[in-house]
Image (cartoon, rainbow, N blue to C red; front, side, top):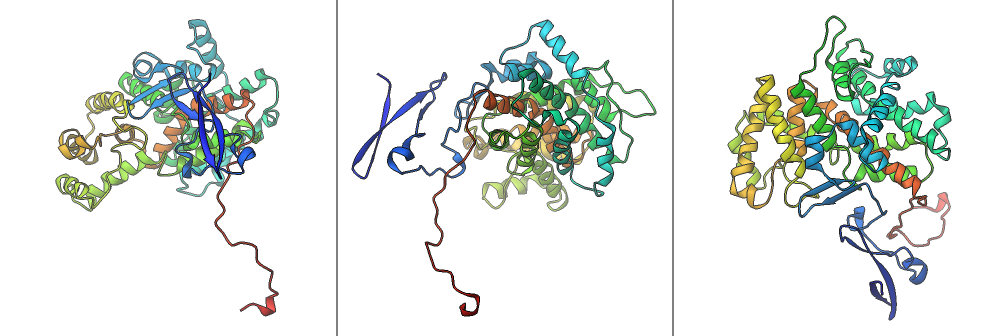
Length: 428
């Protein structure tokens, strides 16, 4: 007999099915509660509400576990390429050598963007935020592929749109960087792999040959893998709920970019660097004073602890090694990075941080790496979006394949009750 939960409302019992996931997560199915009882549940921010059944990503915040399609993030970051992980997220299984070669070949053939899209940059105001540009360009892509506006087409046509979006994303991100510098854009080179091509288009120069450092390629590959998906977070849920209206993939992803832009989501690594700059300028680099104020709850430290992970962020352990390798190889001399290392030392050894499990998280280390590589702080969230793209698409694709109904949350109305209309002349 299947497990049931009983809720008593107005003296009447309602039996609700209990759903158990493959990792033994349990949920009470309330989908018919309102129809049967007239009641809805209240869960601000949906923090205890399962809005879908998904096969993409498993996350256990208490145990510090993150898996894509059953594969641990530790193994994937150590052994896989970003394109391999993208294939896994999109299609459910790790590719064979031939499948991966075909996938990468398709991506290579779609990296160029229409020249008229390049002209869109001309209308952006000087110093416009990179995320605003990315959101606009994502949405604008639909104008160049009107055949993709209807998501209810043959799966092969949907897959072409998916390939286009994944392939053009690094090209667009590098264009945003180049335009911010006032430099000419570089076109993709088919001889490079996905990550190396992005680094070439970003840091290459029209006047000389660019050779990507293997340590940098490895670090960027790991960063993209670690950011590729993270279950039903704010941006992924946004992509799914927008897609549930049968909006096209470009529009759905554009909405995800908008959600990621917020400092409480994708902008966290930008906040880390802004915090370091504040410590350098306002606090004169006095890390001991900053740590003492944080312990006295007089200030917040960004990049420590995590909303979901109550033990440790498994991604942080991986990227810390890559961070150390990048700093060692590039021999960067930057006071901000010195401050970051001091903060890291304090967080890893001070009993206050250790007892509360306020370890440096992935945003802390990713911000340091991006800074060391030479990315301006406003570009950090764009790089997050570059990594998250296969996860967003996988969530959208799964939602469409499951034929999920349009997202329509309920509310508890707490406003004025019925009142009569008063003519303007009689209002006081």
